[in-house]
Amino acid sequence: MDLASLRAKQLELASSVSRADRLDVDPPRLIGGADVGFEQGGEVTRAAMVLLKYPSLELVEYRVARIATTMPYIPGFLSFREYPALLAAWEQLSQPPDLLFVDGHGISHPRRVGVASHFGLLVDVPTIGVAKKRLCGQYEGLSDAPGATAPLMDKGEQLGWVWRSKKRCNPLFISTGHRVSADSALAWVQRCMAGYRLPEPTRWADAVASGRLAFTRWQENNR
DNA sequence: GCGACAG
DNA sequence: ATCTTGTCGC
Image (cartoon, rainbow, N blue to C red):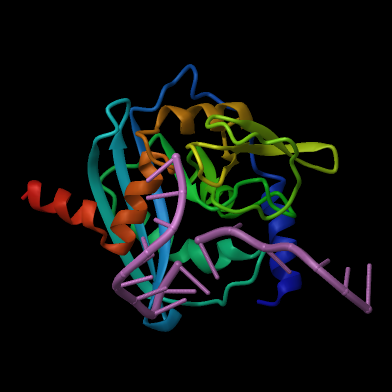
């Protein structure tokens, strides 16, 4: 697959992304978090998928999948590198979440289909993109105050929100993945905070994906 | 042509 | 993303 074909595929996918939202009438009871990492110098792709109860934000399940890496990282084409492993982890879940937070951008992408949107389309579930760095678009006037927000704009269109989730921390880039509106995406991320820079679903997926201390402790307490 | 560029 | 300990600041 050459980049021209992948770009064409993205344009096709982008036309199917929905920004319509039903989460307000059908609040999620289970929220998932997804994250991807690499091992063995990038030869192996590792995806983690976690499930949290809402609103308690209690971790109830986690799955990790490892598959051979198929593609290098190319800005703008991240989803093609990560979705196979994400799908593998997704298929191991005992049940699908009602909403999924994906590490990376949603529609705040050059062709409006970042990994959160692409994966949301693949499994047909509401998704939100939670990214730690800007990919495209611009914003102004984000104050240093915690809670500060600024719209992420590109060519006169709002792609999402830039949100300073915590004091003295770099802002998060929140956008529609699929079947979620921009405002709702920000609101749901805000409802899943527990004092850290990242929302709980993302933070847990991160911990599981990299075997961190907090997660190791959780494992011990639950066996 | 030059700079930017998720994970 | 990943390689990696201590350390500066609130």
